[in-house]
Image 1 (tube, rainbow over the protein chains, first blue to last red):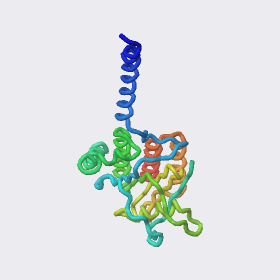
Image 2 (tube, rainbow over the protein chains, first blue to last red; image 1 turned 90 degrees about the horizontal axis):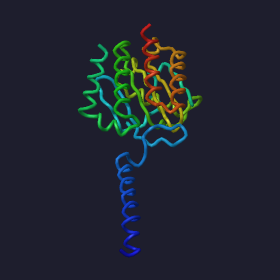
Image 3 (cartoon, helix red, strand yellow; image 1 turned 45 degrees about the horizontal axis):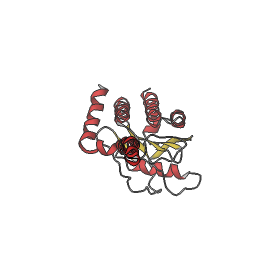
Image 4 (cartoon, rainbow over the protein chains, first blue to last red; image 1 turned 30 degrees about the vertical axis):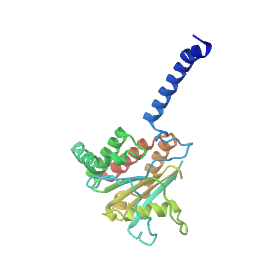
Amino acid sequence: MTVSETLLVFLGIPVGFMLLVTLLIFAISGPRSKRYRPDLTFHAAPVWFLAPETAVKVHRPALPSSSNTEHVQGGARDTW
Amino acid sequence: MTHGNAGAVLERHAVDGYTSALRGPFNGSQLTRLSQALSAAEFETGLQFSVYVGELNADAEKDVPATTVAARGFHSELSRTDEAVLIAVSPNQRVVEIVTGRNAAKLLDDRACGLAALSAAASFAGGDLAGGIVTALRMLAERARR
């Protein structure tokens, strides 16, 4: 067994196996975690939940016109 | 009783929206918790609760922040606007907006909404989106029931 063959068998195969496992892990978990982290940019698709008759809307509806808000009576806001 | 209602919601999700909802920020168990909280709040109060999570972009008006204008616009698209309560969360803008319709405001004054928004924001600051929304829903439902 030559030196190059020894390196290939005892170094190349283990390293290749580790790379394969790493790639599989990333392929399964996705490239980016959806979990919200306050210090990172949020990337998940917008969702709108309406209960109970209407199901989930994922696409954003047409942006609101500010003139049609006479029905609004109250509310509150907060930041973090 | 409320669990049956929540089951109906999840069934609808499974039919025409549940899979796509998973593209959002929540996993399956979080979606279940949200559905149960939404259904329970609606069942107990008769109001129409709704939750939006995403960007809140609009043009700011005089004395009204842009995120509030956007949240009011989403609220206006609900079917029962007078009875509707919208919780709108924008994680990137780090703001939570609660909008109440004309009749909903009779049960939920601005102070109750402010307390719910404060509690939700505290959870969001800790990275718990679903927990903050569920907390706000429960607080609003509890208040509206009285």
